[in-house]
Image (cartoon, rainbow, N blue to C red):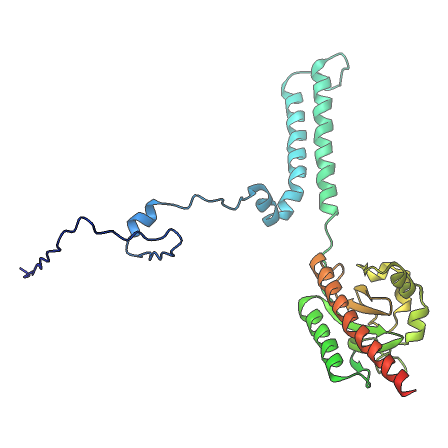
Length: 297
């Protein structure tokens, strides 16, 4: 047996003693012990739980079976109607005055409808959209007169778009100058080099003028369906989607992607935010440059 020593300390009683009551604003720390497994298991989680749609999960896992299911149902219904007509002893010729004949005709119509529905479901399938490899060459052209801070911000915009979105090409034109052309560009058939942006031709096109007039982001989700793609010859030939982001009143950013409808709504919002930041930075730089040139004159 273990020896235990009990210390008895007598505290003198003072009826006038005031006991300290902790302030309700005083922070209290409670340490939870992991040893009380029985109490933790008895109190289960009673919060909201994610709901599961069993039908949707089954259809997503068995797409082919779900599409062919109306054919099976229609075929079985058709056989059941014919079998019932055979064993019921009714004349095989349909009689409009017979209620059984009218019921069989309705059942046959429903069975044929199920068969046709199954055939339509099997013939119409959603087209799978996959990213493509841009057909072109790598390019990195930056305006030589830009200061290091502006160049670093332009490269930051490119890296942000390349990592966060399906962007594969970026062109920024501001105040009639192509500040940067980076990423994949179209290959020139003459010298097998990248096609450089012709700013004058770009600014005279209807695509540029339409974006600058509306001052809103233009999203060409499927570039092959738009005739204005001929005004963007510097992009790879198989560019799938393009976003034209205005930079204030003086510039535009052309962003090419490798996936049809690859830019989501969050990507578009992120591109708009980058455009506002670039417009603020480039606007201050060009204003200061104009003031410096005026002072020199």
